[in-house]
Image 1: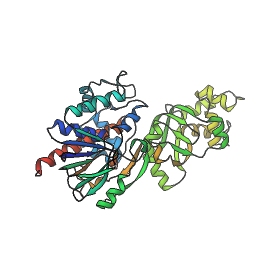
Image 2: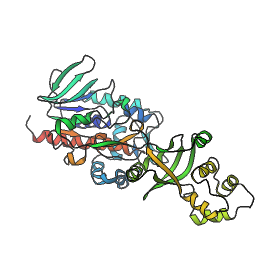
Image 3: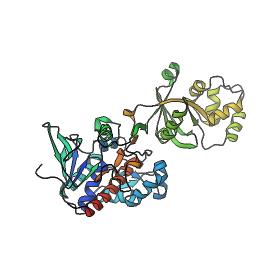
Image 4: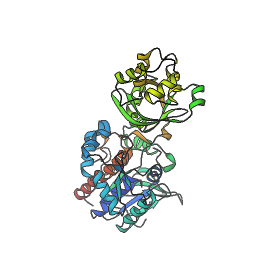
Length: 411
């Protein structure tokens, strides 16, 4: 490099790239992004393959609780750069968005993830942001940041006035989000980290061999799941290993907490969430005698396959003669969850840099001038646009802190 950047951003994901844009637009000269992979925004692109969900259309007041015990902090970040600001940002790049029936915000059909990323990178180039791909951060040295050009193997250092670490969490390592930065911070700074754990992932249930062979993968539509005092509705997918789907992902924090106390964890499946227990019992009692369990479930409650098999798997002794017990199971079927799926399979992760290690501007208390944003921080949120919004919002907030730091520190 011909000169040291004024701001070095380590990580070319949503948090890092947005921070770079905000700083450059604020007039900061010499902003450089260092990305270890061959292209920037790899996890951003992979996440878009399943539906390019940028944010959510619900009111900002409803956003805060989506971030659990980090609600107060995220309400501040969202107030600075919330879902409306994110949609305006996309529009400014030429990407129109709309709110779907689920409340999720998507680009219009003609815009793919690659289109947005290409327009974004072009905007950054126009603003003078330098992007260095295949440049891996190795840690801190006596003269600043240690980096390695992966193409040549050359190691060098840069001494920026401020640094943003936006290295991601520890899931989907093929995109570069592998969590390998954590021991570097622990060893060099003595940082007290929170171990990474899977979030927004499937759960494991010890199905019998018969159930796995007979059912395999099958959807359960219009159901609800409950764990502790948390409940989530939607479509659940039965799999050979257990369960997956949006309601499962939303309850990951509660399930993880329950597994820390006992295994299997008590997860309840509510098959008719729009019917009260009394109505379910009434319909079962009105069923004609002599019908089989599958016939009764299908005709009285519209519960077809694979529900009879699932009931027999979880409650093998229940019969139509025990109407009250059957009604109770339909509204609260216990599914014995024995584990979460592995970290590598998780959509996101909990853990990383605790908020106790950063100040109100997301600057590391142990390393002044070094800020943190995105999934590196110990927070989690459900799918539905909240994850990406959280990364964008923390990136914008950190950029604000960096700008203030630059104003109040001598060059």
